[in-house]
Length: 446
View 1: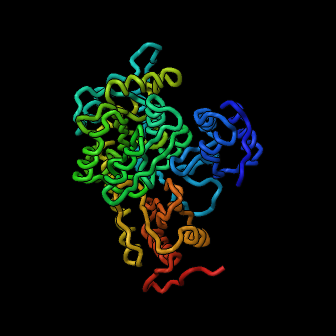
View 2: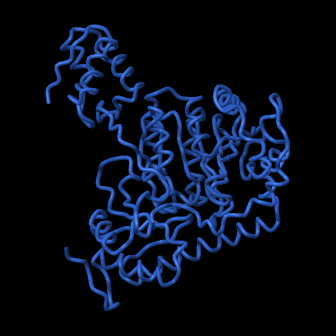
View 3: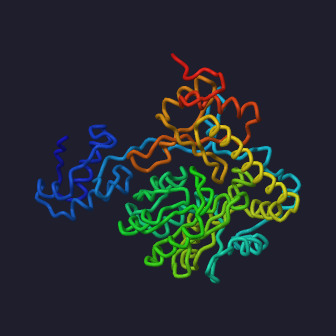
């Protein structure tokens, strides 16, 4: 497709392309001419075209994909976690914790209310004292600072905003947690994929991303969403060694499953890292509506994060902070969180055993969800399961690139009873064409 761009200045070139995009003359995914080609055609300096493309990227109209060129951005909504609206199907793709296992906050809430006025400490002193020991686990830094934000996604957004500019590159696990992918894309940053295997983020993938010039790395040390992978001690050590060569790259460690995880924490934050942050949210064990996360970071990053909080939400509700503290320090609540952790692991392992027995080998990993590899395209399996009464989530939205990454489903099955789990396992195996020895019919014909 030939695009006749007009203009002599950066603003004129950007305005011409913006008009074409807004009028849908240039559709999402359209590859724009190279900077060199536009500069030659218009007889302008290459830096003028670079500036024009940067203006469009900052407006979210185009995406710079390195060697893949600059393309018109797809402004469609990024897939999000949660129950699907307006469906009569049984939703087993939501990514939600079991509401029956979320602690009742009623009694703790009564002890959490007192007036807080402007000028008081941003972090409740009691929560800060408790969280400091919790967040320091395994960190080789004594000078950590704590910040409280409205959840992990809020922390990631603000951490990136205080350190990066639009079009800067960020290394993301591939496949990737949906909220992190959404945050990076809406922030106007370039996502650089780092493959994930059974031991977590790969060494060669991280090295390649750093060589490509990423300015931040977001890593899930355990219970990776969606795959359930957790870093082994050897893999984490190797990743720290690679990162040690880039001490000023911002390393963000999202330990989202923390108190529920069945895997030990092996951190990627090394002693030589100068810019780093570890985030732990409360959403998995206290519920998604507990919009609170604690971030431990180096002092400079903490200062930058604090400045990003100042123009917006100056502090997270102290009622919420004290409620969180009351819950996580309550012996009965902590016992309940441990029971929830055992329940999630046991139900996921049992369902994996059912699928494996039916010819779909699956490893349970760690976390709320299961990552199910399929021998056939996921779209067909999803449609078949819808006809059987199930709503599942395909794996494609979790991947950054468009390459051949395999076919997967991500399932949330921990709240199914035994009968429902057996029915889903049978239906899934039948939809994938691998059902063995159950006597049930195979793929439904339409």
